[in-house]
Length: 127
Image (cartoon, rainbow, N blue to C red):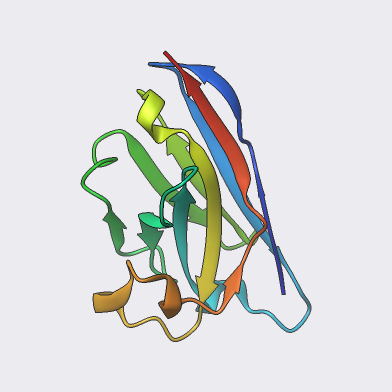
């Protein structure tokens, strides 16, 4: 299974970016997977950002991004999006998407709940 994250770049504080995470694999049923976004800044541990359930019913956000970021999915395109608004310098990180078919929603913020990971896309927010 390949998860391709894209959409990162350099943006000024207060700006917006939309990240995409596209899945490709014949044996991978995208709609049966919960999808999470995580990020890792230099010298820091990977941290949870947002997640969306397989049926696009439930979402979960880290407190640090709540109200600024929106996660959504289009199962017909096997793609999940992360709309990031009002970006701050502290949002600078490599952003990763992850997929899991057996995620227990209570553990949706834990990286080890997911089975597959994308390669990451760099987001840099300048002050």
